[in-house]
Length: 215
Image (cartoon, rainbow, N blue to C red):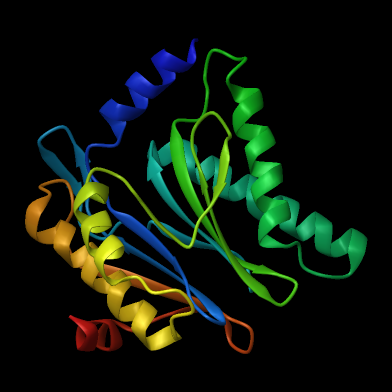
């Protein structure tokens, strides 16, 4: 399968989602909607699109649900093995590199992983954010978005992101970016899930009422 075929299939699959990542001063914020679609059918209204890899790394997923689940399982397994071998958690950059190799290697098969990922977390004591496409390329970002609602979300991110943002401001911008897609993209809906990753608290999913305060 050629890369052009992969991208064509991914384009067909990624007709419904919006995920956002923002690097803040001492944290990373990940946000996503909860709708899954199959063509014009809303297939799910409580779909999880943000996953904990370990306490200082998380990932958002867009694309094929089955492929995303498989990749998340592989990332978690690699994180556990790294912890056993080295006695410490794997960094965001290292898990991005490992995942990149898996994605790139799958291109040589007849069944590549049709996913786009945002990996956020810490490299030692520094927050970091990476965008991975189906071919395995890695782009380090200060902010990024994926899915059918990403053009709308980027409009908010471009206008409101500021370097060295504090956590509260980053949460507000991330929620606003996903909300903009909720209002304009038919493949995005059913509310917003928000996760923060900080040095002190690690991975934390915000309660529904806390997210609503930003809406």
